[in-house]
Length: 226
Image (cartoon, rainbow, N blue to C red):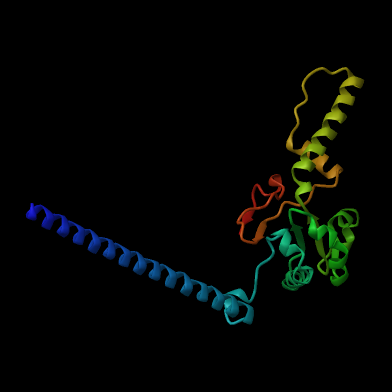
């Protein structure tokens, strides 16, 4: 009986020691990981500082020749910070970006369009530039403001437009064969309702959620998302 009690006590002691060792190892691992991410954060901040200060030569000259259109996805809460949005656009214009699409889900930047344009002397609205292509040159930036309504709602409107168009044609021509809609048909319909923008080469996402937040999916088929 005493031997059994001694064995139980020894087992309890070993179990407690094992738990303490595991707890200690977990804290050590957590400390190492925390230090790693802390150092990584400092390195990123330092790199950003060196880039903005011009110390890194490889970032002094950016090759923006292949960047025809840049899309920026902003959280709606951050989109209310109009001054910061204007500073971002001014910086993009300074480095030579000529076409920018600003997207936020609730359309905050659309509502602030006039305030933003008032601070940008070289900006041209996308809808206006399509009609006045001569205004868009090396001294102007083409701006597009997009929101969630330019996504699924735009596709619905474009589909209804195509349906009504070809239904009318079928009634006039008497053609009962099924109509096949292709990508150019949809692009034409989207353009007709004012929701056909340029396909961005690069999409930047600002905010904690690393997703496009409803950005029109058909426009980012070949887009690099950062």
